[in-house]
Image 1: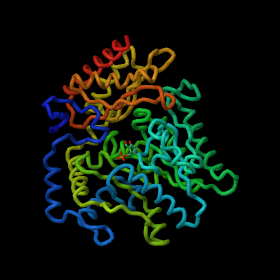
Image 2: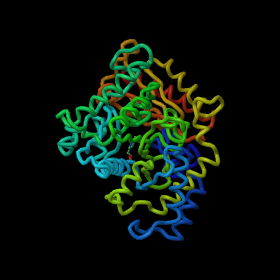
Image 3: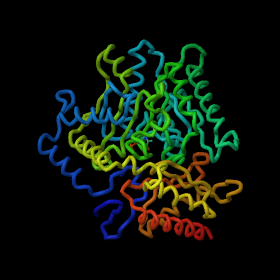
Image 4: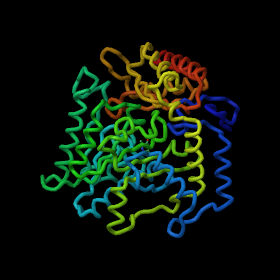
Length: 447
Ligand SMILES: Cc1ncc(COP(=O)(O)O)c(C=O)c1O
């Protein structure tokens, strides 16, 4: 098996175009030799030291580079490195809790989140996730957290709960108001709020398939959180490090002049483009200072925090992203980029009878399927329509990420598409033609 650019060859030599970026992981392309060289070089110097005993030059340098990449709002902050998304989410939830304790709010312990979200598979991350299929059988294990931690609605314009016709321009505010109410009632007694943090995916990931929020919504969410002393955690595991055409997706809504912004950013996946297991929690100065001025130490840790070989991979990936302007390549709003070509090609899929919606931003797109376009009624879940499309695409040498549950957690089929930013216009044209043929084939297979 091997990989190069957008291609993966399996053990039998069959070639695939990786239109899913594995699972929205790979931005720089497969088989980039300079990344494995950087990892080998680090391993030859020192493969591992424990963070209780040493920091490493690679950790120090990379943390500084990431803070600069995260932008003005994170100046003076700090980075906590882990081995992936779920570990980073656990870290962020605990960091927010400790922040509240340090500033004199021990009553704040809940992390509020959104329905139809996904934040990871460990129990803490699952308790704030809304993905019904992925958490259903674990609910008894999550007990108190699931009962107490509210999940509020999220704007999903194709199936707007308010039945609006203006692209959720106004109802974004209604969804934000739902959060404010959840914060105010979080302890059930009407006195001090028990909410420590609110976590959200700036652009919905796998669960809904690249749903972009309406304008104004995230700014209102940030203002509400600020007003109520609730930390705002942006889960950029899927969207971070260029995937959406910005360094972090939140940059679309919280530019450097914005007076509100997330307090904590979580990154994984694209951070190392999959070359090594790696995640990062990027905390703003406010959070770091509170802990420094309080107990002085974050009560948390994994053995493999800040693993030097993973950090060497991440650092080399960041250099590659910047030197090749892959964030710019992933900007679907700028004419002539591969992301703009990708967007244009995908939008044509709306001509397919089974396609209800095509949405997304940058190089993160969702294609939602419907049995009937007028009523938007989904295919019966047991038909597994998205799985059928993915299977047909696989036979044609195309890898996509099929999901179900976008309508109500069970029914509703969609694909997530997130190719490496090194994909060419020719590869895009071929892939989207094959995808269209796969959709038709899936429809025929229903009989
Ligand atoms: C938005 C988001 N958060 C968290 C996670 C969990 O990351 P990991 O699978 O690396 O633990 C994922 C994984 O898909 C994700 O998409």
